[in-house]
Amino acid sequence: EAGVVQSPRYKIIEKKQPVAFWCNPISGHNTLYWYRQNLGQGPELLIRYENEEAVDDSQLPKDRFSAERLKGVDSTLKIQPAELGDSAVYLCASSLYTQNPYNEQFFGPGTRLTVL
Amino acid sequence: EDQVTQSPEALRLQEGESSSLNCSYTVSGLRGLFWYRQDPGKGPEFLFTLYSAGEEKEKERLKATLTKKESFLHITAPKPEDSATYLCAVDNYGQNFVFGPGTRLSVLP
Figure 1 (cartoon, chains in turn purple, blue):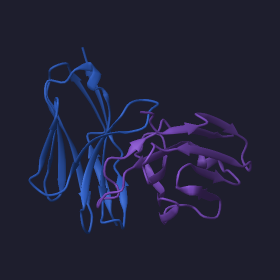
Figure 2: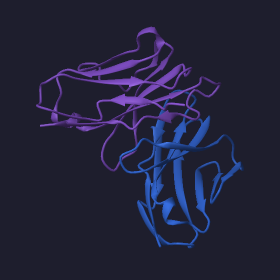
Figure 3: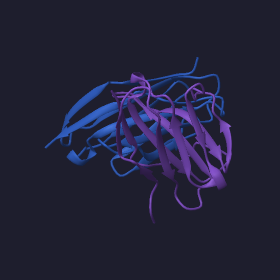
């Protein structure tokens, strides 16, 4: 069974440019998460989707970040415009919804973003 | 504010030398505590979920335990392939989901 797929794996951009990350979750997983991980730190949850609905986006910097999950499958995370401090690894994860929405998340390999 | 701390920050062990990693948390309510393993350049890999104080779970050389304020990940007779960063995270009944900074474990042959 294929795991969580993310693309691109690496992205280098100039500051103030836009960037987008794409995630394809495990087939049948209705919960999808986007995280940001800075070097030497644990992942920080940005947004969680149940199907196509964003149920927790309290940590998403809404002035420059946006996300969508059309048809409740693939998801895209966008940053516009990017700032130097956005350099990090962006991780996508998915899970089957249970009473505990954070149980057993399956992570993709991440997209390493470098903003110059 | 919900907080998760982990210690030590880094740990070097000889192969076969057992030890424990600590995860301390401060949350208003705990629905679940999670342990993940992360290899360089990869996403975290799920290990365990613990729900209540006194609960224990085991997987190969790893055993996770939970008290009201902390969790331990015990590694028995580690092998070099156990080298990774071990992350814990807590779920505050959906109000917050927070990862700790991780412990980088190196097991030397």
